[in-house]
Image 1 (cartoon, rainbow, N blue to C red):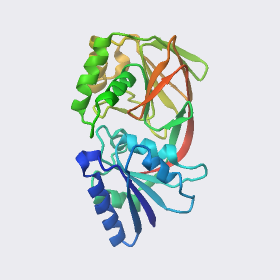
Image 2: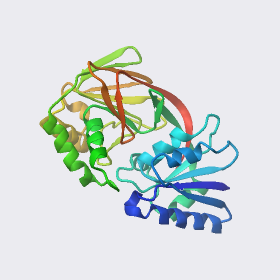
Image 3: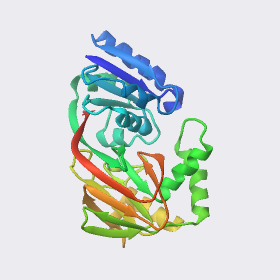
Length: 291
């Protein structure tokens, strides 16, 4: 097989490039033609895959975290349907946790050769694609605050100061959510999920699945420190829906409105502020590799 390996060299403490090289060496020894490509700047991976044709490669491998995977799916040209594998080396690794992906080059090589192709659901928010999660409100504001101080690799500790600053800021928004034009809810935090894992530390959307054919939408009523601690505790040790006033909805079309521009994060990275948010799902659209 012809295999393109795209690696984010700052992921995994800077050794993602080394892992990509090891993976390429293993694949080449097994008779494949593996081409490693180390990204040089934000958006470089997206630019690289935008240049490929439908028959240029048999597999694409992402060596990096959720943000790098998101960059790749946003760069794929129309008509290119090459199965994508991931060697997870990021902080949260939401997709990797949901699919129980191997974390070693040898394991990833086995996955490429013997894994199954999953036709994953692909979501789109205001023309921006995502495959794991979109968040409105608190987590989006935290990722925005993180961008202001980020200098390199992100760890769980990196979120501590941005989280405290967001909570101390105190400015909250009320979001109005419509799902498939029928179900409606309102709250100060909205999570639109295509995977179960949240932040790599708990399962907010306990019934979600990357190939389920639906998005799992969670609308949380309050954005204060006590409520957020309660949400995480319940998601970690029980089910978020056991809390009063939490809405758990399913659907393929989601609209989020508010009185002021809406801060959004996609697959763990800040996406911007939007006057209105429209999310749609393409079921069984993107081929990815799973065990």
